[in-house]
Length: 278
Image 1 (tube, helix red, strand yellow):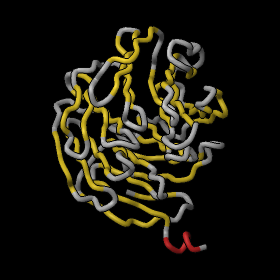
Image 2: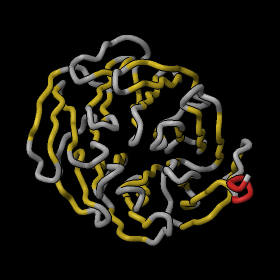
Image 3: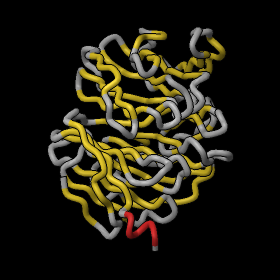
């Protein structure tokens, strides 16, 4: 892979585990590296392999930032897993949009125009809400947000206009959300009031999006696209912070630097010591 722009970064760790999507979970104790039909759970930042699992058709991953739980989508629909063993908590949760609260105590799945909230780990049904949904995410304070059309809002209340939202993500430690739209632009939201605070164009057609825990960085990734690349943007104005060619996905930990993965393996890159001391 090749690192671009002016942010001084140094390779500080690597493993041959390949991936096309990735995330950090359980208070950034583990790195989850996924590729179609395979999932690896690694200790972070040592990259020691903890467990592997091969769910047929695995293609999506949503971890809880503050608990040892994650949602994955594979053949048979969504399922909740415990970390680091990757064992099932609940399975056959449907094929629609899904999200897990950052504290891992609750999750939501949408199917047939109904959003169902369940508690974890027991799977008790807490709420059924009827309304349009093109995406789900929990805010840092635990409120469920929905995407419907081009806007976000509380379940059942989102307004449907504007370019449709293709991906929705929130910061785990700040009231900030971001949406990636079909027409290629990114919107930034204040999640406490679902207020739009900024829009800017994405630098390429991204499949994946995530935010840094503090909500200051938006990470756009190519996923399985033909040209693997990553762009890290400022959530304030969309300014390009980092450009990485040859990597398929990335996550921005609270300690700085990035977790990146691709066809070559997985790596940790950090701000250089010289830059940290200035």
